[in-house]
Image (cartoon, rainbow, N blue to C red; front, side, top):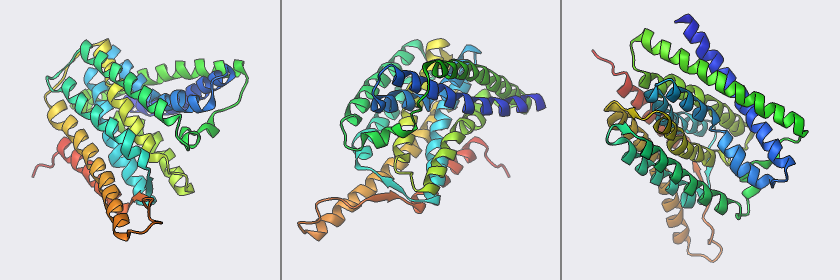
Amino acid sequence: MLEASIAIIIGFAGLIWSADQFVAGAAAIAKNLGMAPIMIGLTIVAIGTSAPEIIVSISAALKGAGDLAVGNALGSNLANIGMVLGITALIAPIPIALTILKREMPLLLIATIGASYCLYDGYLSWSDGVILLVTLAVIFYILVTSKSHQPDAEHEADIEHIPTMSTAKAWLLFVVGFALLIASSQLLVWGAKIVAIELGVSELIIGLTVVAVGTSLPELAATVASALKGHHDIALGNIVGSNLFNLLAVMAMPALISPTVLSAEVFTRDYMSMAGITLLLAAILYGHYIWAKRARNKLQTSNATALPTQYLGRLAGAALLIAYAAYYYLLFPING
């Protein structure tokens, strides 16, 4: 148990560090090959933020722990919305960009509904994996195409963090980062399986809690740090994008590598909870938009054409955190 716990800690630390090196190396290679910074930010950097979840999912599937991989995907989405956005909104209000309401959020809702088709029958098949990846490719194309033509695209792509380095150093970081990603994920999955056995809980529960929260911690740290510095205006878009990748890429890995029979709770408890907190976030966001639109129409003045900026505030943050805590009560009910 002690060795497994140490393996989990080292695995998480390795994942966080190696993912940064992997993304930095890949971005620098693309930059040296002449790829436009805006496209690097919208593709390589965007995909790289989900690298830990994807690699852990692949590793778990290869070890026959499909439930752990699916739990990682669903649990990460729950943690991203309930924990990351909830805590960040309590620290500082998060601006709600209109483009998220018109583009990213509808796509996330479509992906969430689509995921129910793959999970409802309790079997994650190879064809389900193909459907998820094809859907991801279509959505990714829509996002990149639309984002690359919007005025604030460079800011949203976060291109200032794309490193400049020699090609040799970039390839070194890329290779070392990728190798350590694999090694760290193997260590983490091994430790998680041992802990599940020792505690007498399922691998699904470990994936939904320990692994999911652990892979979401870097996102929480980065988002909170940005909020404290006043640079958190793209936090909402990053979370929605990350959740899209979790549903369509992370969950596709066990389906393609090792088709998995899922326990009934995956759909009735975990998927429904994830869909519920996603719908709660959508209701809050669109509720703000409708309120702002009505407030503008009441003014009925020529200089009131633009909607006032809306924010995901502390009340919304508290609601998301409470919803996340309620999910943990479903996982670990208090008897007596």
